[in-house]
Length: 89
Length: 89
Image (cartoon, rainbow over all chains, first blue to last red; front, top):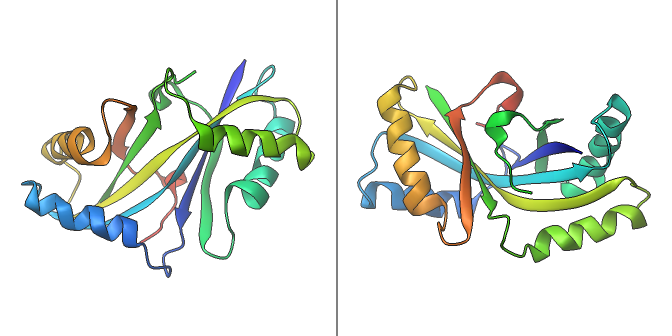
């Protein structure tokens, strides 16, 4: 059983109040040297069978239509889960 | 100027209603062959200067204390942004 990861981030020109709130908390907690932070979404899809090119194409379409709002968000990554992507299933 | 990516996912034993809602929409939109889906968060932090081991260690601490709730979430990845992570700044 395969797993595909989809990463969605707010477009650069879109305000990201959630990211700004987290960023302003960093120095208060003693974390310095960060100049910006943006918060997006990460989806992990479990696939029946192996992750083929067809499956990735299906996921790309789902990412563009269901997992992201193309007016304000970019799909920055659609890829088979790697080892460092962890195991959450 | 470097960029570090932090990925946070709900723990496997935690219910993920948001992911379930998205998963149940997939077949309605014509996407089949998916057995599960979980939704987490992705943070992109802009760093002054290069991404050193010290910076990564700081980010790891921030991820564990501010970016995730360790009771219900796992930090599945802290890594310098790669090319396929896109450019959102």
